[in-house]
Length: 535
Image (cartoon, rainbow, N blue to C red; front, side, top):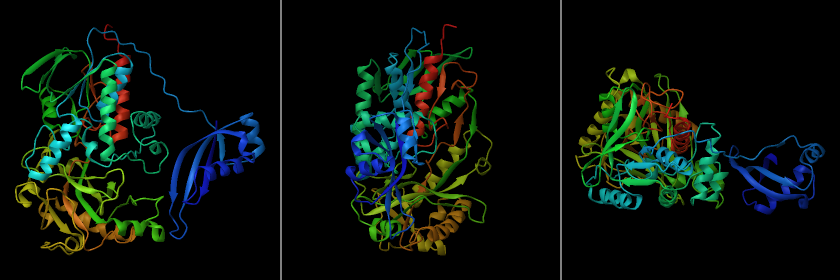
């Protein structure tokens, strides 16, 4: 297979133009190319007056690949091997079925991998199935009455189900490709395989997750909803079983020798249980801040110039970072083009916000988290769970500042920069479904964070025209970007000193998004398959 890189074409180019460009690069007739697949499609927007797409394509040719490549003289083409996933040998010999706790990306791919290996996993998910969960979330947004077992953080699909379904990742693991191929197999748009900004959208992600669940069940696995893990039975450094509370509120004990902990970044009670059992935990840096919301058309114009609104482009995104002189880094995270700010609390008495986009990304505003790193020395204690305490303190302050009913505190960017309270909205209509109360978000977030945010907004306004728009809305707080704790594990993916327990994904401190969590789930499943517990 020959891969041709850096094929530059106009925004309007279609498959025929791509095919012709590939043939031209190889200096061969089009009939010599028997198959063409787009590997990557990215946008070059450095010159606003001349936007174009850049493609990488894989072609199969009629003839000797090496000879054709040599004759073409194309320096942007190489011979590549297609990606193939080979299931590792299953060395596990056990009478017990493995358990997966949590059914977000880490748990889904762990369970799917185990099921495909014939190991019939049992999945425990404390929340509800995605359809019931969606109804519960919508009810919360309408009534401001939260269900602590079924919300934006807990339930089938994990926290990413109510986001953008964004699939960008910084990890280079080859298993990322498998995750993308699995997504497409179960109903995600095929364009995620090559798009420069792959996303599925909240409205499509739910069905994809359901399809994965049904495949796990078809292969002999069980997925149990409203079942919350409460204990892991450990003796002599080995897992012997678990306890959980089922949907009827009854305690159930189950024998098992392998547990993958894919509990997500908000399962504080489960992490507290692990701490009481003496597992090795450590503080981990995380980030806090607010959602910043602008008109979508303004962001589109800033990024695309006169090409804004072109049907081949859709809503524009951005990714900004800076290091203001006060010594802390700030960055935008989980940018949601044409999306909404969502109320994302998982417990009474605390306000949390996040961002969400549907597949079309056609809402009135675009938003992003504006985050500042928080280090363990900021936690106020050396206790392993001190980061959770800091999270909760911020969320409780936000609850009080919002009026005590899950209304989120908000402030105009112009007022924030002048350090004055906001008393009314400007031209930007905030989208948080539980509403906002205008005020001063400095009353919610730590001073080190807000000082850095203020400096960053000014700097980012120079990077992206209009980012520092005075009427833009800051809605606080965003506190759940990642887990503030890491459950330590060894090179075999097992918790230190506990054989058969596999901390996994974001909640264990080993991932930072849908794709990286899914890859970690696969890796943990491979580790389960490699562990012969009869030894």
